[in-house]
Each structure stands twice: as C-alpha cells, then as structure tokens.
Image 1 (tube, helix red, strand yellow):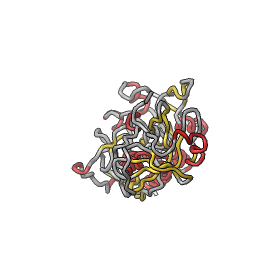
Image 2: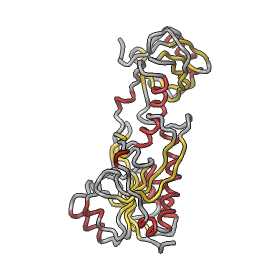
Image 3: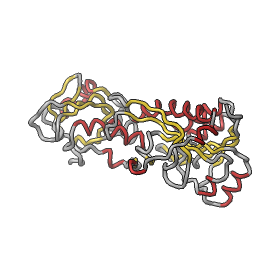
Length: 320
C-alpha cells in the first residue's frame, strides 16, 4: 500500500459527497475541500451549501469556495497546502493547467461512465436515455481536455429497466468511492499503468436542459420511458393535461398496437394509464398533478377520472 497521502478533494453534489465520506474515513489526510460557492435554491431562493460542503464542515475539514480557479490567488492557496494529490469528483469548475500542475502526483478524477463513453456533465442520465446496457465509473488522470485523460481503473455496472438516474447515481457513488480507495492504495502503480482513451469512440453527455423533459408523444414508447427514467428525480418528465402540467414519475413501455392519436389515453386501470405513442404505448404507473405529491395510477384515477378517461388527450403544449 502507498503511504498515506495529503489530498485536496474537489466536489459539489451528493454523488461527490459519498466519495469524500469514504475518503475521510480512510488512511489518507484530506487537507482541504474545494466546492462550489453556495447557490440559491428552493422556493425562497436562499443560499444553500453544497452536499460536499455540508459533509466537510460536519467532519471539521477546511472548506474553500472560490468562484473560479483561474485567479492567481487560487493557485497560491492550493500550493501552500502541500497536497500530494487533488481528487476531483463532479466539482463543476474547470481546473486550469497551473492548478493541475500543483500536486506532486497530479490530479485524478472519478467520472460516472465507462470512458470514453459519455464524457461531460450528465453521463448517468445520458446512458439511461440512450438505452446503454451497462455503465460504470472511471478513475482517470486529469489533463486540459474534458474527461480526456488516461484511465487508471474502471468498474462496470449493468443498467436495469428499474434504474432511474437517482437510483443509478446512488449505486455508482458506492462503486466510485470504492474504486477511488482501491486506486489510492497503490497510486504509483496505477499512475504508471494508465491507459490512454480511444478518442475516436468518445461521446458527450451534454447538460440536461429542462425543455428536454417535455414529452413528445409522437416519439416511441421505448424512448419516452427511457427518458422518464433518465430524468427522474430531476428535472422530471412532464406533459400537459389541458392547462395542468403533469409530471410522470414512473412508466413502462408496451409494444401493444393501437389506432389512437399520439398522446391519447387508450385505456385505464389500477395497473396504469395507457397512452398512445408514435410507436407502442406508455403505461403510466405514477404521476404528479400540480400541488400534489406523486400518486399511483389508481389514486390518480380516483381523483381525476373524468379527465383521465379513454379518449382524453395529453399534449406537449398548454391548452386553454
């Protein structure tokens, strides 16, 4: 095993916090934590600390929240820490070259995909949306390009039909944290045997835009169902029932044929609300009306039966 290392950890969301938690419990010393500045959130738009900051403060770790790492002060502050390594997990800010060059062992990143598949901001969501059979985590060395560095280790995980972005993120956080600790146990060996990526096979996981969550009923039921899973719990796919925006939390595709217009309710029952798509039908099993919590199809039908009858139409635009 390598000797204990002095590490600067850089991360922001819940996914990153799991890595920091396991790193802090291990033999290495976390000399400082970099995380993004507090951001406004919730209905009141009050400043909220990141999940990583919350955990770091509870653990008594030093927290740094620069708006950018491009200012010379950032490099000076990090140089003074004497870190052997910077570990980056979903930090959200670019590390410029002068920062990458500071630690003795450089910088490594834990990325939630099997690189070079799904470089970029939303690898978990895009893997589900694309119908990938598996995903995983990659531990890589960092360089100037976006997720382009040589890979030290990968760990694979099948994507099941039950996985949402939320549940898959939780599973990958556990997998990634374990892979990180294994890498650090013999970091010199892993750094010496890093494998360059095949850049011709790269794909990019663009940031999720809220407008992507609006369901296009002319699409196939398979594609719509995957997107619902990929965008749950956020931003959550939605459609319009008249002027009401209905979020769909859970649904499955059916290949059963139909003769209805895309978006029309074909049949209803306690097992779900069957909606015609461009190809096949979507069986909605859980959805959320404005001002309410997510409810099962059976509960929704009890409360909105006249609006959810066969022949009623979901739309991609507000009606009325």
